[in-house]
Length: 166
Image (cartoon, rainbow, N blue to C red; front, side):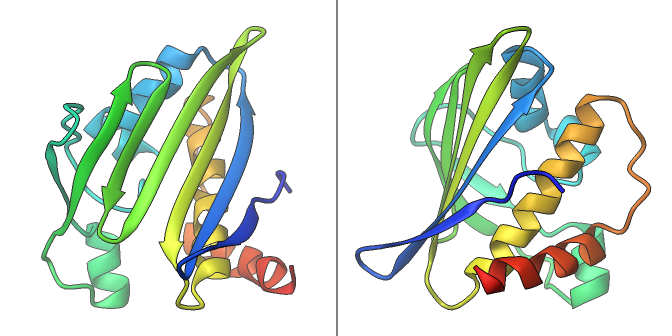
């Protein structure tokens, strides 16, 4: 199992979910995977979005076909806003009430990713952490050109139990 993320309660009823991952790929390659619509789909990012990297730009996060089919999610977008983009180092935006911050730092022949997702504390922290944990495994596989031949939803469900325990 890859290193787990951490959950931390913040003032104001929010929860910070934090992951650190090292990738054997340069920051520019990981940046493309985090910002290019086609590459986002390639690692099953949990929304369909065209990221406008202009600070202040409005964003729309549409549910994926799989989310609509599996969970009956309505085909309506969730609004977001670009906070900051400094290619290939920093990407930060809102997605509904959540804030997602991706930091890439060169590390030897690859890079270190620090990903922080701040959410409202409605008890969903372990499920959200498990989902992103599984998602980062998908990102790693996609970056390495490995096929994604496992059930992402089942992987997240399996991981959720360990996040609930911590």
